[in-house]
Length: 278
Image 1 (tube, rainbow, N blue to C red):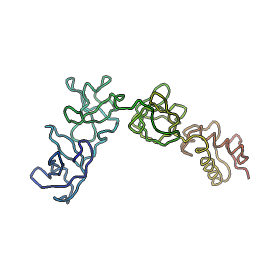
Image 2: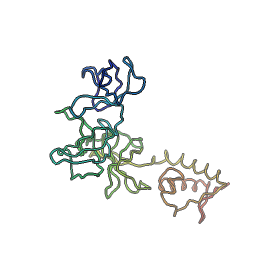
Image 3: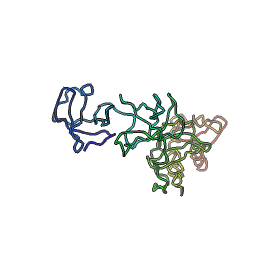
Image 4: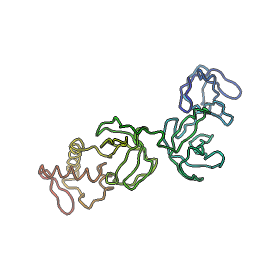
């Protein structure tokens, strides 16, 4: 059966003047309008389409790709507002996405960027957005284990750090000390679980912790030292951004790895950086 608000692989049943009709299973035939028909598409073939509703609430298909699907969180721009209905968002389709007034948690104006979850309203069977994020996230203890890699979505900044949605299920926090360069709402990253809190939230890091992180990073630093002729211009005054650009890790992780190499008598320090010891 065709799933509303998601991309589907559907079979072309027949061709008609308005376009191609696709087999939507229990939802019946679904029209793919002529302007969206890819070249060479004929009855009997299977085609990937996104299923949504048109301005008259009829099920339709499109080969356009939305910026987000049902179940996703996304940062979308407000195109217009109507006091009686809510705000209309640009989600990459010719028909805009409604953010109902009751699903807003603050005043919204045209041009704003807002973090929302895409869902199907149970009463109307229409695709809508919700900015009330807490109702869609789990506050029970997460089952992720420490140092597990997770996909995160940045929603905004707080005094402690950056708030993030972890794997579409839980709130997470990246502390400022763990982030070498500024992040923006809408950024999607891979992070690592540091701790799981009783309130369901997760403390995150952009680097693996402990020996798991230090050993491969130490080997990477040694390789770069050898390739550079035995010295690298990185020291305490190097910026976190410079460290991240060169090694792909935070300055904290870099200092831990270099410290381990120093204790192993493999490197030394001078005012210009670090040197490889023979």
